[in-house]
Length: 135
Ligand SMILES: [Zn+2]
Image (cartoon, rainbow, N blue to C red):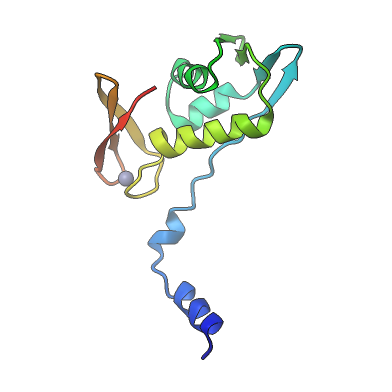
């Protein structure tokens, strides 16, 4: 058996747990640039998927993009020009850091004990608890 075949075999024998990890799809931004602003049209969807308030995601994006944001009529308005790729990177990072459990990969998490710049993330699927720096 050569190296590739061994690798192939190893992948096929991976436990199903690692397959489960990829079940959750991080949503992508539906956005457009209007003048000097960026309109994120699917904040409702992002908020639903993350199970976090829209204001929470708005606050994160504002900090990360160093720009004021506001929520109007189911859209998030960013007072800066942000292309969709950069916006998606931020959203992906938000989900990976604050939503998807780093133990089991499921998005069934909630925030607890938000204080002194940190938040405790609690996973309702596997019971994991860990602390991350908050925005
Ligand atoms: Zn978990």
